[in-house]
Image 1 (cartoon, helix red, strand yellow):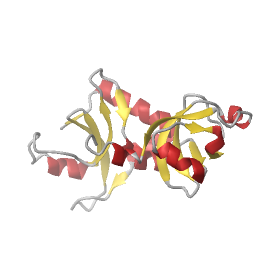
Image 2 (tube, one colour):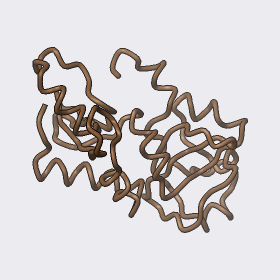
Image 3 (cartoon, one colour):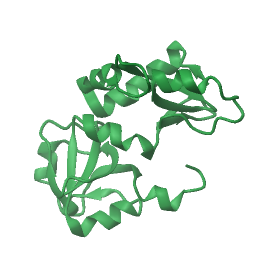
Amino acid sequence: MRTLDEKETTQVFEKLFKFTGNNLKNIVESPSHEGPDPDPGRYCFRLCKNRVYYASESLVRRATNIGRHNLASLGTCVGKFTKGGSFHLTVQALGILAANAKHKVWLKPTSEMSFLYGNHVLKGGLGRITENINPGDGVVVFSMSDVPLGFGISQRSTQDCRKLDPNGLVVLHQADIGEYLRMEDEL
């Protein structure tokens, strides 16, 4: 387990900024009330076995007593670095993204299962959408009862979605909570 170098930090923050915008500051500067210390610490990002974890400093200090090969996980897994060196967010980051999302999309109950099976979001399944979404922006997908279902990349702007036919693609699927069942060995 080690801190991220400058290049890795840039990749992680760029990916998180795509989904959270200026709310990235809330993720980085949020106080941590974990551990025996009376003063709140901070959260930090650590790299362990090509996976990036978001954990409190107090937890990281206590985890240094555990051998590297024995440490399975630490805090919340935000994403992983591929062998090619690019960074991918994982579904475990959904809680952090949902709390700080800049752009949101709500699905109709009829299209929730389709998204949870790994399909893209179509205009016909769109319940609501936030304003000022541009193509290529990161969006968090919610059910109509505000339960975060996953995240993806917007294919169209908010204005284009209004005049789109019902079978038009709105959000490209990246991750959803159905992955906990479909890919439980890899998570």
